[in-house]
Image 1 (cartoon, rainbow, N blue to C red):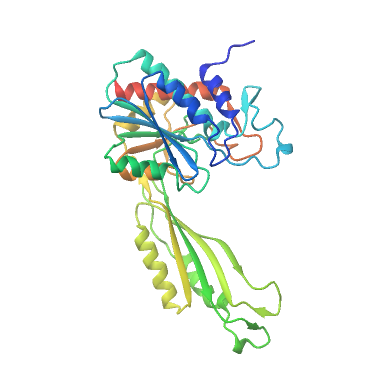
Image 2: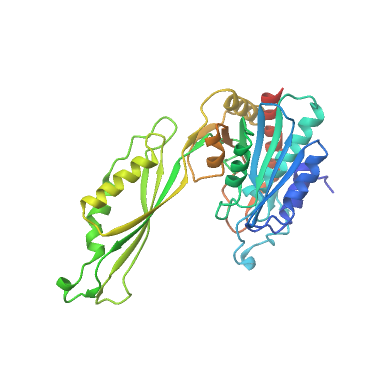
Length: 378
């Protein structure tokens, strides 16, 4: 029987634990037991329903931090999986399990890369840290955001942060996320007066009232984007109104919309534009805003150079820098002044039935992480 690599063995151990968000199911303890042997101080931070871990080796700056999450999304109908989602299975060079790509494979690579680096370079400069949560796939209220609040209160800063989210598309390391767009959600309620469709003069239809304003919002060119970010996007995601009857004018209409915005515009500017437009149309409305995350960007420099050259050492190719995709916990870390990038395995199967990661990807990722540590802390 072929001996499994250290990364693959640890990944299998982590994937065997059913840590459906916000449960950690012992994953952090497993990681902590390995890190403690390297001289890490382990701090467990529990907020409401979420277990978090802050582990640090060293007291000096710069601080290199691995960030990630042990929670996974629900499996859905287990009978539709070819292999049980919490019984990791290797077939044809692929490791199948819930969380294989998102992101327990990355967690295993982080730990093993750190073990290899510290063993070879026990007197490295600066500090190495791990910020791990079990609330990334859930409401993200009691996870990384709370840990960062705790670190900020004691002025404990991160210099460079590598988030292990699955960033790659065709092969491990082809894409590095060096930023993310901001996300702003609006929950709009437009009030009207319910009535019979045959007597519209006795009613006030909120659907009709908001229609022109919504059309104007879809026509606005918010910005041009820039070298790193595409133009800001406005999208309506939900519209609900009416009683279900064909002869009743609705009395209210609920609309949810979202902006994914670049660094060329601020959330305050978006809010002002939307509310000014609704007021111009004299809508009777209530509007609640959710600030999901600010845009952030790690520009070229020491950290990007270290990441890019490490990837090229392993793959022979330069990675592409990208800010596409959704949000990640990097949005909570970047505002502290940390430089943040995301590097992980291919994301083709994340959140899907039969989620998987390539066995070779895990070993490649481990080597990339170790080389990045060498380039930043030696």
